[in-house]
Image 1 (tube, rainbow, N blue to C red):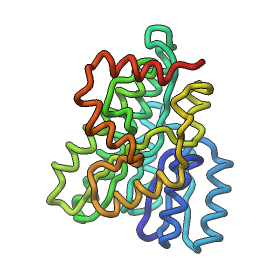
Image 2 (cartoon, rainbow, N blue to C red; image 1 turned 45 degrees about the horizontal axis):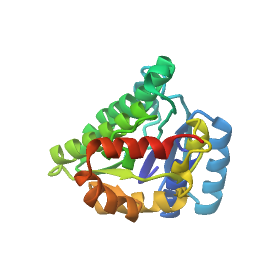
Image 3 (cartoon, rainbow, N blue to C red; image 1 turned 30 degrees about the vertical axis):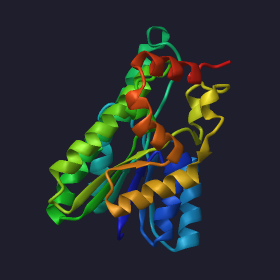
Length: 258
């Protein structure tokens, strides 16, 4: 296998679109997600369309030590990962004190711990080769607190900060890290997070366009890729100067299900 991209959360949404983009460039893939049927459909489609090789690894990264198990499987298959796409993520709606703590732990495990562990496992080999690219799917949520999705917003803030910190540490090692920070996207996230009816997703953009902006930014070695130009302007020029309590109320109202 050559120019291998490992994509977590590859069975739908941004992850699936990243896989299609990577495959279209003649690059091989390792697809990781829980839903093996969806992964196999995607494997068949991509191999037929682009004459590449696709490995499928069904795995639930919400489980403890899953990242290490995934890494060991890749090593057993003797595959070199050149591109790491930490895309798997989970949200959840509701007031923090009313939500199931188990679900919050699972969110942190997937959004933060698995991403951190996979980066830690695959990065040293990239540094040794002086070649490699990592794209972490964060969110514009990572730039502000998010009442009604408090833990989700906090996990994405971690991803934004973590990506930039590690990127600076390895900037002379031939490896780049990029944080993809989309706004609302047309994926399964809205339903999975229990947010049908929220005004947040009325202006959602396609997963395809979001993935393409993230992939292109990764190719160029950019630190941050905010895929929505309107949100980018607001994050850079409006929210930093607005009263904090006003921002919090605005975000809460935007996410409230009516």
